[in-house]
Image 1 (cartoon, rainbow, N blue to C red):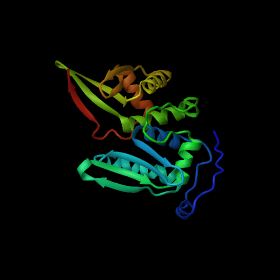
Image 2 (cartoon, rainbow, N blue to C red):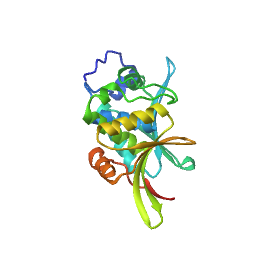
Image 3 (cartoon, helix red, strand yellow):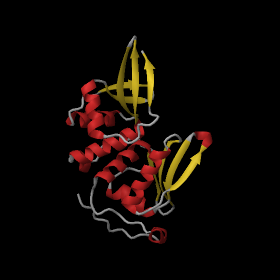
Image 4 (spheres, rainbow, N blue to C red):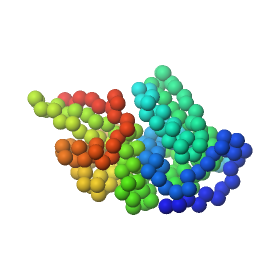
Length: 220
């Protein structure tokens, strides 16, 4: 998939040297997955344009990874904000051009993420899909150890508040021969991978990059 980027850059974007990728890539698919997880696009036409990514303060190495992805793909240095009182580490950039690319070219909605869907240009390519799922898991997923008596089972979970998106994730995993099920909870939905062969296939095929500090024990 090649991109037809024909909008003019403003003075600020020209000064910072903003550039756009010419075609879809694994790195961009991963970044889109990251954005679906922890990203936010704010667009108020002719007034305010900001792209924003917020992470747990423990994920400093991963935040650097995401910052490097933005630089590699768009030649921009994202600003970094640390809020100790909120336990967050954030990347952001005020850029009309970058917001336009995400919104117009990549078809990513702005504002609160009330409706998400895996883009067709990602679903149609297995490599892009794997990279997208990696970014999504690294931001909205976790590995937990479920304890049942003397037995321990490792589970993979991806969380979302959107039921249709949960179904899409489950279908995407199935297309990669990874079995998962959906459970409903008060805050949304968990897409859970329980079986050992599917767990191992996910780790080997998707290759998460942000597993540090993301696991925990659940007694049942």
